[in-house]
Image (cartoon, rainbow, N blue to C red; front, top):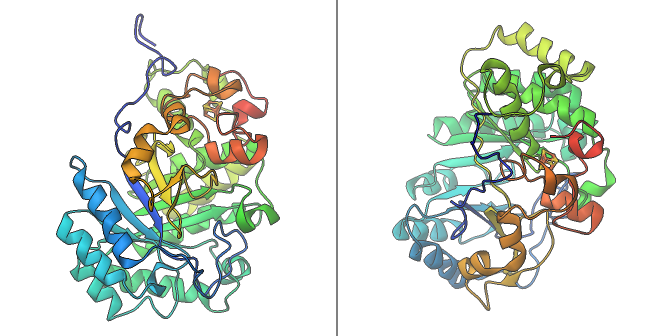
Length: 391
Ligand code: SF4
């Protein structure tokens, strides 16, 4: 690090102090699927108390009233396509200049004319879930026969209709060794963004087999490699991927800010080698720079979640209720909530609080809460917390 330059621990990114970058609205709990790791514990019928169309429009009005660029409204669920007013709300958001993305389930609803109507209303980004490179793995998780094929078909349909497709993959012991095969599959399917979700013990996610911190570190190193083939790679609830990305950049650019030695940077295990080798075997050598954004967002920083009943949470995986959009403005809650202020200012305890990457990363606040009861505590999935060398 150059003399006199502030370390990451001294600088906090203030871009997200006034409004979030992404607003997730869980439009409904209703969903035709019952995936083993679901955050939402979704069910086939909607729960009473969902925000109404008028309340959804009020939420959109509020996002439109803030400074441009407005936050992106991500319509999720449950299955957002089960809401009969989704096109009406997308049209209203378009009218108010609020960008909309959707995160639907793969079901019979994901088809024309609904897709064409949403595209017409300016929806351009769609994210789907794919949790295995084979039908067997994916369908053991998604619990619907034929769902693997249906998901691949949906990717093709969405691309033909002009949508930008993002694939979300939840990583667990069950599928971790298929990650390279999934990357190859997505590459061949023309997927532009791959978002890899590291489990948090909420919803149905508390009943399945999580990877350990050493495996998580290997996965992050593999994802840096996977981001060098023209596909953007991001993580959810694993912001330490940004630490790894920064550390790997230091290998290519000696002098970049890191306090780790070259030896410490090479902490890859057998899992990393297996995944990295398989990637090169199938795709050849890297073809692009690393497409892994290092914007320092996390639960409550740049990201906010509105539940089906209007309850506001730092993220969908952090069940602390901060208020309700039926009683207060979302942006007021986001800007003025004390816990969110602490999260944005990286006022953490333990190893995360002392870490040089506390703003760039900051750990999963959802996992800290789920395991320690303290949303400002340590993220135990990070190898630095689990007993690695000091960051
Ligand atoms: S110790 Fe905490 S802040 Fe540091 S890299 Fe790990 S999770 Fe991130």
